[in-house]
Length: 144
Image (cartoon, rainbow, N blue to C red; front, top):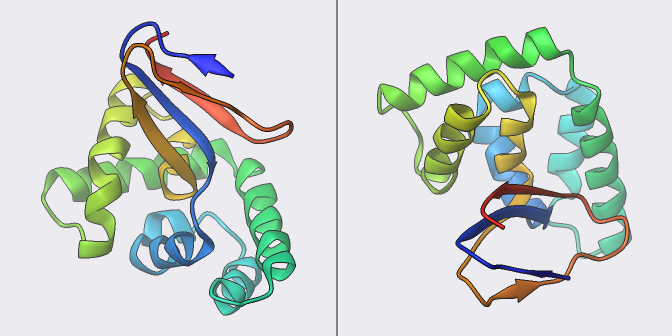
């Protein structure tokens, strides 16, 4: 459990698979980092009623993501940020755009910025708390 002592930003757990699938379709810089067969399989099961199938596809996608070549990710991140700064985002991307730009400012060239398209983002106020399940990926962004 984490208790916010100040304004606190965190990435924790995964977005719904349908939303990750939308990002894979609308953010070519993100999708290009992952093997096409993994992306296509993920998209095909993202709205499945079989939760275990969705979780397995998400596990495969995330496993591929954490193995991404840093130089390739850095180049794609540069393209993405330039596109966003030029105001060239799709409707599906608007929700993540400000987080991507903020993370890029804080952690330039860090391929973890692409987690904005995979993980939940929370902003907590002092006194708010949240818990993290064992084994659940999370990253503290700001605050304490």
